[in-house]
Image (tube, helix red, strand yellow):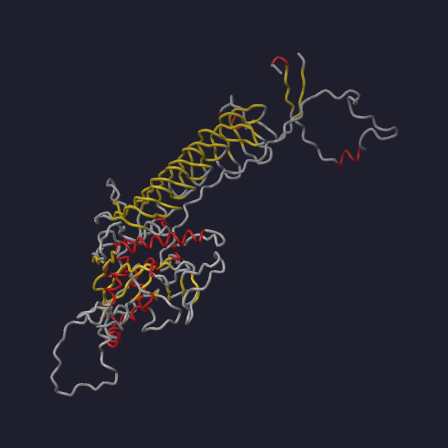
Length: 595
């Protein structure tokens, strides 16, 4: 029997004593530098086949099929992974990445079960979460007294979120359903608070059906940058039919009423004597279709070179207020009853040609809109028929003592202002005498900017020169005590019914986009979905031992002899100082074992 010996470094591969005791028949392997361990099949001294690989640094335990490829270990096929923090994955791997179908349980308990592509959620899948930042529901908050009768969905937070539908690159994208639930007593089904079914784009809803039990489902449209738990942009869909413009009164218990009231009270809460009498939706199908066409046209033009900019709904389209001032729609003097200015706006929209006839053009020509309702309120006081417009002058003589009181006249009409949807696009700072926005220095040749503002950092006044880029969406009729009575009501303090601004809990510190300071109650931007912990990088495989090849012809068969006179070894003193070397283990292979 011939014998040959091969010295193997102690740290390359050794059997683990504990693992060998558990299963003495399975070979084991340990990485020489990373201390990762493998329990499974070996081929040519390396992991190959199915087994369990444990990463030393992250303590990730991976059970899958592995093979050596290009100095790397590659895992593929059905796999099971678990992390020390409780996260786990069971599904398919391709080239050591999640690819195919799989179920991932996050460390905080969230679950995704669906399709993957290159380590990203991509395809169809279901996501269930209890993360607090994903469960905020400002649209279900009824903290404002005017909207306190808004159904049973009280509070601004759900307990469970569930999404079922299409994904693309870790985001909702395509057709899907997003639902919010409240926990129920043990044994009962969770109560549905809100459900949106429709189309998503880059993680945000765009258009579909909204259900808020017990209210009936509504066709809604979002702007593409608002989460599904917030107010929708539109609660109605225009039709291609010759319907005349109409006003539709909103139910004070509806979410649409609460959405308009929230934006109104965001600044009008400083007037304790104010009260909303009615909110009416302006249904002008033709103007709504034109506004949508303008929005698509502007987004296409911005995306084209040389600007190559994406349309941002958070800064390029806004909700703003407009109060019809005197002379905005005077009509023909020959008519017995000329229409009120607000009636002309409902029927025909805004008219930029009439702007500045009474109030000037401090920031250029166009239709003026205010970010805050308080600024529009000052112009509503000047409207014809207003009790403030008919108030006596400050220097007028008081009635004589004992004189008969004047007969009570008809009740003063309520004040009115429009909540409008405007397309500001790329804005420039306006100035007196500016008839049109300036040329866009970053746009195509001959292309102008789209609107004018009072300042760039925090605009409060917007000037829209194009009538088709502004739509009167809602007509708000409200009452407000005269300044003297309003001052007295503030002095009474607690006797005056308080009116806190709606969504106070939401606006108390949950984030506000810097582009929209105080435009309406701040809505927290939709947070990104939790990132998946990447698989630890696999270190390169250890270099294989050189094959035992015969020496080339002419090469010495052993070490070269020492030169004449040289010592044959180290001196005794040097041998005493040299550290003791660790004896190498020797593997003995005999011919009987098939070497």
